[in-house]
Image 1 (cartoon, rainbow, N blue to C red):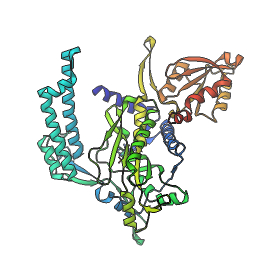
Image 2 (spheres, rainbow, N blue to C red):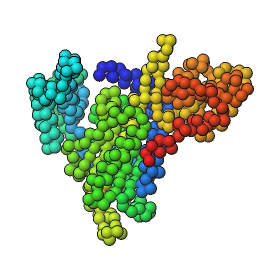
Image 3 (cartoon, helix red, strand yellow):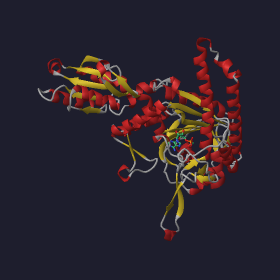
Image 4 (cartoon, rainbow, N blue to C red):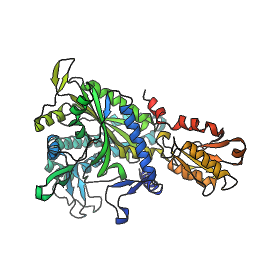
Length: 514
Ligand code: GAP
């Protein structure tokens, strides 16, 4: 794990050094858990968003997009339950003055017990070698059984406390398990309090009587309150979906792990409206489709897993997360939820408007059920970045850092490099740039040795480098260097467009989804 943490630190500094992600307001010492995307980051992020958007709206004729405002009527957040229940339980350590999420402290304690079990298994595997029967060991070893029993009892007590919203019990668990503050090392804890994660601001001048409004903590509500507008104006019939990409804001108590948990972030959400009773069939379908979308990127199938929720929110009848293996463990990147008709019914109740759908086939009106797919753009960005980063030892003792980004997502698709800065090679290279730039993000670079220029492109994940040499002037060919294999092939300039397109187009990725 320590080694993985080292790698993660390197990825974070690489992201800054190569213009992917900067700390927000850096020259003012930064703003905690807020980040800016640099010249390469914004391109990668836009490509991720385009992949999601096109997969939703081009491949499904019954899904359309919207772009709703960040500010919404405050009653929307009352209806959705966010004003009363969008809380995290927080606890402070009196000595370090640091604030923690009580539930996270306990979850980390459960993870420590899981680690202990894994360590026992690893030790035994080493000791018994070939003859090791892992299942038998897990079932019968008294030490493992003891830790597992402690873990299960803790998990049950924790789940019950969360379910009952019992803040005293959460504190008692922290005390009983002797959990210490990682900074002060003490157990001098305050009470546990609920903390609402929504940012508030005021709309209108005070003379008019200002109204408290919220920065939306999710984009989904903008879809719910527009569902009937879209259904009517788009003449949509159930089942149909509405997709949206936009900013969301949460005043996270503990913001850690770079862009994994931010206070300002971006979501890609899709609400799929279905007939009551058909929701679980559609839930299973979306679970499958969404994993396929992730896997098509080729980051490694073993890096994904589902995490089905045992404990469901009162309004949900099924929920799962798609988790990705980050350097700091498997973490949620996307949530897929069967939200019943809760949100729409709440908006009907709070607005007093009839927002039922008239089903012409059944000749009846009802409030549709909803399947939601919700993915964080920034988390997706982080998963792509982490799984693409590699420090490679090359022959002859040389090294390179390369980002094996999926080519359709790469910020720059090709770099055109004249071998030397004279003899008409820059002019020839410029001609090629001027031809390719209309279809691909193309860079021209003539500074430094060719080796250094290759390394710069490897570091930002450019799939192709095109080198123009003296032979190019004679026969209109260039070398095409492939980022991952570093292989160079001699190709005709006239073929460049096709060769690059076949690799970098989003269409090739979308076709994998069928
Ligand atoms: N509408 C449902 C919803 O918002 P969520 O599980 O709270 O569900 C969905 O959030 C996704 O948004 C998460 O899977 C994650 O990718 C992303 N997300 C949530 N909070 C985030 C944060 N503080 N920073 C970055 N991404 C976040």
